[in-house]
Amino acid sequence: MDILTIIGLFLGVIAVVGGQLLEGGRLSSIIQITAAVIVFGGTIGATFVNYPWSTVKLALNLVKKAVFNNKDDSREIIDQIIRFAWLVRREGLLSLEAKVKNIYDPFFKKGIQLMIDGRGADEIREIMSIEINQGEDRKFMAARVFESAGGYAPTIGILGAVLGLIHVMENLADPSKLGQGIAVAFVATVYGVGSANLFWLPLAGKLKVRIKEDSSMMELMLEGAASLASGENPLIMKERLEGFLSGADRTAVVRKRDVI
Image 1 (cartoon, helix red, strand yellow):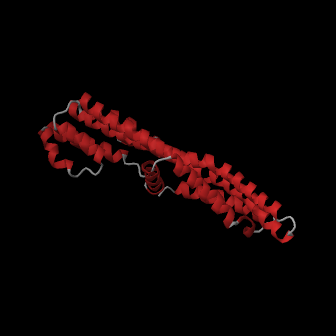
Image 2 (spheres, helix red, strand yellow):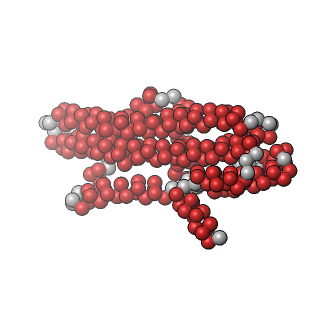
Image 3 (tube, helix red, strand yellow):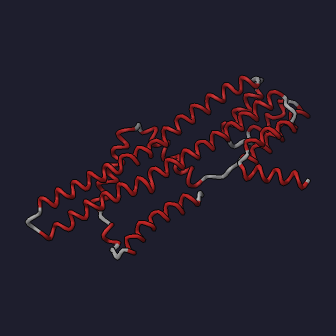
């Protein structure tokens, strides 16, 4: 689980609610069902109009992955590629046929299978690069679902405020109903601006980071498969593939070498 996403969302909500309470306000003052229905229902509805279901579905799947699965497997993939490289040197390409079924990542499995089928390094790079680029484009489009929601929410919040003021104007003769209308007006604006800047837009940003990380991982797999196909020396291959590691992992590798 990505703990920073949870902490960030929690801190954002606590800051708003805490500020309300510190000013002497009541929590019930910013809990308005009518305003929530207008803002969140309107935002989601507008977003659905803007995108096809396939893109929305992909966006929801990306959220699940971004929040609950942020493990970096780069080190593990590099180690696996190097083991394959030594095996190929000793026993040839066909020795990997028995190993393919144990590869959990379908993209990596495809690259190794292409290599076993006799495809050259350049052909493997071409085939796998198309899949990386197309997949990245689809995922970025899905991330824009939340960017769009972040753009709609403040405007829908203003719409909710106007509706609340209309309600106020219609009941000027009945003072007992004025407070509720004014509350809906202001709270709808809070919901619109708050949800955009505390949830929709930050979530879109987090997804973009995850998408770039996924693309980097796939490029690592591509380079590993192409290097295996070209028969590159495993030691040289390892040096080059470690360039894909994150800063912390790369520092750990350097320290390990210094110890050795």
